[in-house]
Length: 119
Image (cartoon, rainbow, N blue to C red; front, side):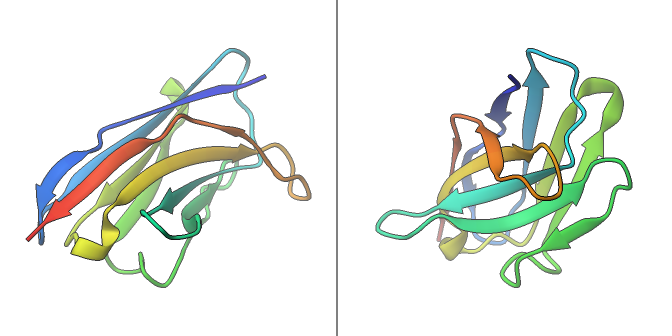
């Protein structure tokens, strides 16, 4: 079982930047993919960005395209989400999750880290 721990959230002004980290532990980390999701108050959880671990292919929700960048640090079993040009609507709890295979669900989740964007 993989344990995922998010960090890097906080309070930032609109237009500013944050970098979120997702560190894996508990077993050898070799997922098919790792993705970031977020959930804002009163809203459903939504996909933000993901990365195919072995190839480094990245994909983004429309809301994240052009502003967010996902990357991986293989040596440290860590996934990063660089968030730039933050907007008020980016305020949410951000979670990372891993997908073991291409056909599996996201089966390990972190505890979440709060991102708050102020005006």
